[in-house]
Length: 134
Image 1: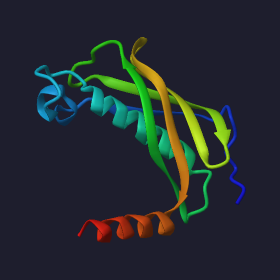
Image 2: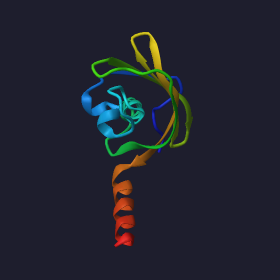
Image 3: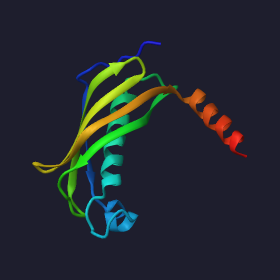
Image 4: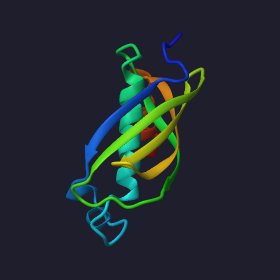
């Protein structure tokens, strides 16, 4: 199947750092600042949204790799902008360059890989693997 995703695709999404995103809340640190796992989740969510709008309804993408640097803190209450750019399309494999900003301050950057999957087939694979574990 041919998908209508091409290199250069760019999307932005804004988030507010809430208490549940803080390192102190999720246990990845003791401070009330944006946790690295939450920043990565914002990046993944933005890449997912960016790709899904170009896929048929029975397809989605799943995250398979992140290589992220968290370079500056952002406090609870900060408005964060996440920008993603599709830098590589290789069949079903998508590579996004991802960046997060607090105003003009870069807080994180890196690469994020996603794969295009048929939703029903992927759910069936999960069920099959689950039954093997029981």
